[in-house]
Image (tube, rainbow, N blue to C red; front, side):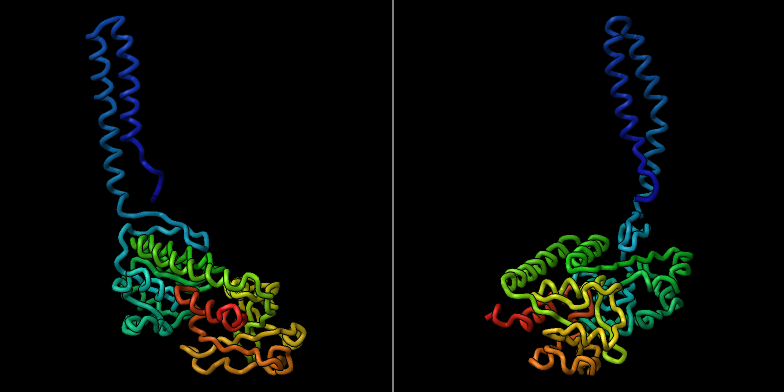
Length: 333
């Protein structure tokens, strides 16, 4: 809600009823005529205030205040009909909750579902065109992390365009993001049904791998230079859910640069390469420092579609299932 919630109408009514009841007792002891005069006087005094409070409520009902995942207070219209997404995962969520027909702009990387490819493009994820965004007249701009805000948030705010940030760091956070976006777009039931289905699949993976010995995993984000995942990455949580332990789980940050020496010392039992999909053949080869790791020597290098792992949205559970089957094939026979 925008501003203090006005309860004038209800407060006035309660005050009138309380005072009228109390004075009715007094009136029976004194004078019926005096009682009527007192009640009528109260009605005259309080009626203008009650009328004004109703007018205020009506004027503010078109907007609502929410807090995004970066802790920012964002003022939104009650009904959102024009959406811009600045990340592929957010585009996927918008379509998944049934609001794809309201998407008026997205990025060059937004290619799923197929309908997203025909939406007006506003540039790439980190360098969107502010001019194009403004020209599309969105009511809300969805952003995947707070780091995207710096370049353009002030310009959009000056034009009263709301910017909403999501920043999930675990699968549970992603489920909450899906539900929250569904609620913001007035698609609560559809989002709730989807989250329930995704949660059921994630629970099935947990049940299948709960007795398996955890596998030490190195997740290679990029080889040259070497990047991996850290303690703030949702993928660290995903590996744990798949029956693994990320060897870089204690490294600060989400996607830190990693030294070859540290990679070699980590001695992973399995290596996951996020490759294919919109990434093409990038990141398809294990970094040189890990060529003699237990994972490579034992043939435990797994390539998984990068779009299923790099986009914190509905398809991440597909990535979870593939990862769990790779790490613990015996659990899914």
